[in-house]
Amino acid sequence: MHSQIQYLPITPAFFAILVLAFGALIVLIQLGILRYAYMKLGVSSGTAMLLLLGSLVGSYFNIPITMLPGPVARSGEVIDFFGMQYVVPLVHQWPGTLLAVNIGGAVIPTIMSTYLVLRYQLWLRAVIAVLVIAVIIHAMATPVQGVGIAVPVFAPVVVTAILAFLLSREYAAPLAYIGGSMGTLVGADLMNLDKIGSLGAPVASIGGAGTFDGIFLTGILSVLLAGLAAPSRPGLAR
Image (tube, rainbow, N blue to C red; front, top):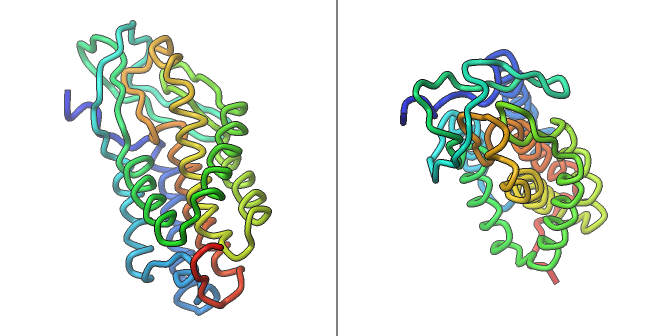
């Protein structure tokens, strides 16, 4: 069973697009166009790139939590949703829907978000960002047979960009990462756990298929917002 739950949440072609976006970000940093980005995020350039790379690689790995009873309706397929192609893993003798946590789309963003909240003491604004984005994303989230809960890929990115600047231009970058990643996880996955068992998905991964792409692009957005913000290093939130 362990080998059957490790898979890319999206097709190789779409995964390659995310890799190219990651590569383009590296080029912008090296050219100095976003030279203040990491200062604004409060991490070194190496750490930030390692986190984004870890999200890409970690998207392949799922940590099993529990098995939900219910029939498995689909296996070994590719499901189209809002222009994205999500992978349904091929499984054999599967007793139900395995609820799991994706390392790249849930574990790493949670760790990074926690660090950013503590680093900049963004308690109130982070809570507001997560709650607002969670409500909006929950309204957009769609149960997809065989996949789980899916969100249009650019929805978290657009909502996050607008809200982050409304809450604080100075802290737009960390708020974008925190709100976009945690808000998507809460609004799309956690608030729809009651629907998972009826979707016939062999694996329903929190932060995996259906939400990983949006969460990863939110991470890229946070770096871009950091580069657009004022170049001075932010202090503690007042």
